[in-house]
Image (cartoon, rainbow, N blue to C red; front, side, top):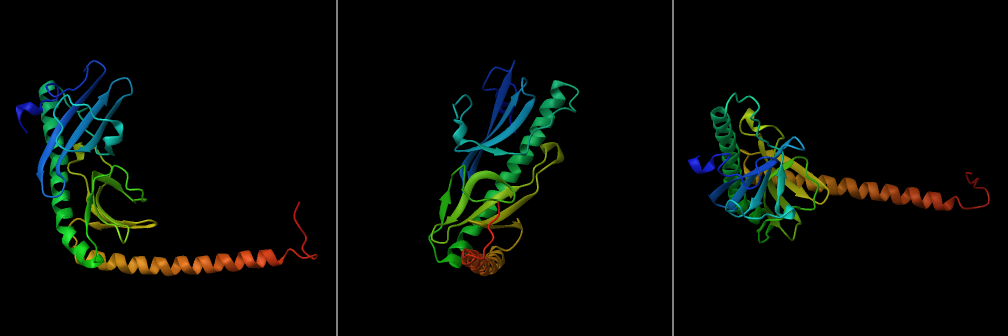
Length: 232
């Protein structure tokens, strides 16, 4: 952290009612650059964290559609003075920055194994919404994508205040109706093999359920004879 990261010096809006502080995280191997925005509103009693793509300078406008809500928020309530608040802010912002750096480096390592496992050209998806259900919160608006398999690999985190230190992190593999979170330190090749097995089991179960449902519908339609006592 530098003096330029001072909470009040980096305020982007009127501190009387609200303030937004921008923290740039650059030189990332996959995302290249991200900006963390801590936004507080006195009227709503909220202090929330967002991450957006690119290195945004202080004072720049960012649309709501460009912001990923990350539930790892600052907690400065224990500060007895402004100096203590600055120290807590610096430590907590550093914890989130370190989490982003760690997760981005791991995602970059996953790119090669993902390409080998899927036989697909891996793309970097910078969408705020991935349009797949995830079992945990995304840490940053960057994910790996294997388009032919419709498979996404993204960094996820647990919801907690930054006063508790660096948030718990993981890597999620996700398809349309299947997702599983792996430890950040797990071997990518092994994780992808495991997910492929999970996908195969899920596909078999889905096929069995569809067959069962189809049989149930057929039996119901057979009941449309004279002997069928309709309800109501």
